[in-house]
Image 1: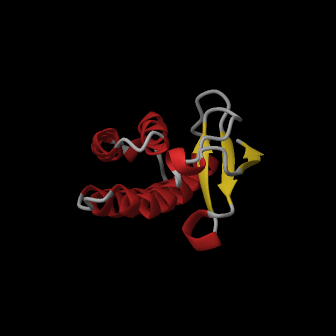
Image 2 (image 1 turned 90 degrees about the horizontal axis):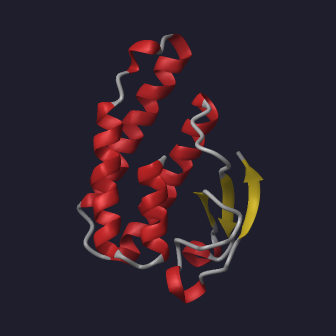
Length: 136
């Protein structure tokens, strides 16, 4: 979660170097998970999540343009939401925010550690676009 939140903050600041660093950190954290405490549906869920994380993080690492990285963040946000809900992985309060204008008005969600909207899909261009939809 910390690496995800670091990437969200880096996207808010339009800081491509920090985004790249957080992608690497999250890839390391995902690889380091030892699912030996999981079984049955929990193990199956983690294996699915892990595969999705690895795929999207690897793709995101190879994209050079910050604007092209943002859609990958949207996919990772969806996976993170599922992981938090599946396993109860929380650190304090977490909020699900939504920007209706992201990706040509298709909209996109993200997870934030506070209720103040700081939009990772538009960064400084439209920092406060969005609303809180859910508290985790």
